[in-house]
Amino acid sequence: MSDNAQADNHAVKELDTLVRHLADELAAFRRRALTAESRLKEVESHEGGAMALDLSARVNQLEEENEKLRVRLDDAAARTRQMLDRVRFLRQQAQTGG
Image 1 (tube, rainbow, N blue to C red):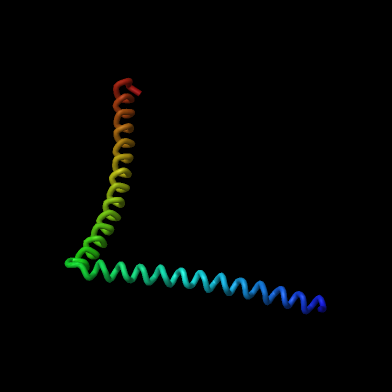
Image 2 (tube, rainbow, N blue to C red):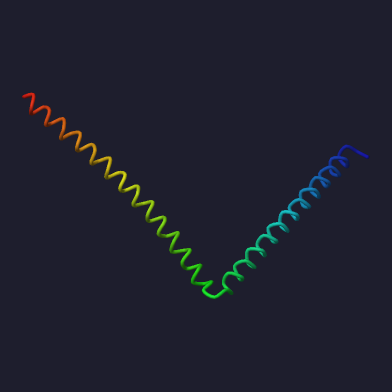
């Protein structure tokens, strides 16, 4: 067998291995998707299932808003502390006549 034929044979084997691995991964993703769809249908089939999903989405939205408000509150608190420090400094300057 020539070197060129051996290289081709090796490349075909590598390609075959890669295709098998990709097929296995695809099958695993398909199983996961089917399981997720099944769970979603189960949740929706229960009384109030759709409402529970709506509530879950609303809770997530409120949590995001809450985090944004926390950040704004922390920023405001930091600015307030800075202003208080400035007022204290100015008061000390005024008391010392400086």
